[in-house]
Image (cartoon, rainbow, N blue to C red; front, top):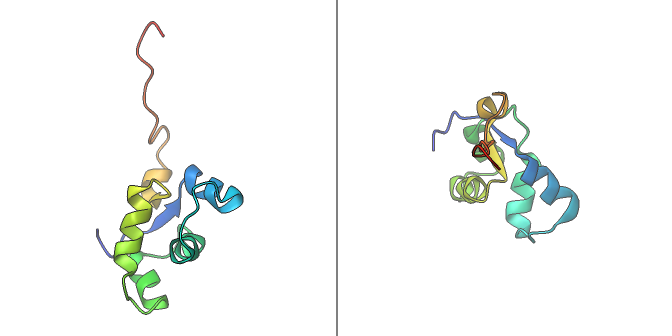
Length: 86
């Protein structure tokens, strides 16, 4: 993970904040709330004292709750094309 990368909530992340469907831990949920598409991973680490923040960010990435903000801006990002004939 690059500490200068800016992350944004994915559709799944926004849904999790409104429904609590997946039951994220309080620490992961609190970090998800702070991800805003404007602040880098380093900014978030500084804001939160740095302890374990990169590991929690990676958990949110692995769970598809957040994505790189630049990726969110690309049309079709994360869309899997449907095979022909379906």
